[in-house]
Length: 111
Image 1 (tube, rainbow, N blue to C red):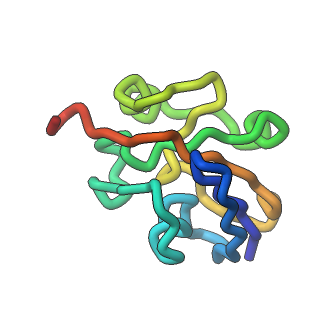
Image 2 (tube, rainbow, N blue to C red):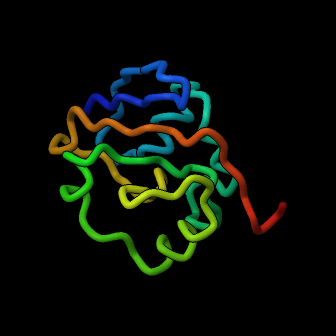
């Protein structure tokens, strides 16, 4: 189990335990963290679980897949440390992970 800090765009922090094997998106959903819509339910088919990973953690996550990169192109507020929460699977090595939620999410495929 790993602790993740979800930081709302307003600065409000939520520190929650997320079981190994779950994703950052599932951790937010299961703990009612505002700011992650997860419209596709984790199928990497939208960008509504976009998170901005703290710099110190970004390189530890490994490369995004081409599919994830395509969806990130649709994300609002994209940064160089943006990832989709549904593609970050939790493990003990990610204990302490910090992610910031963008000011808005949108699914450009259905907007």
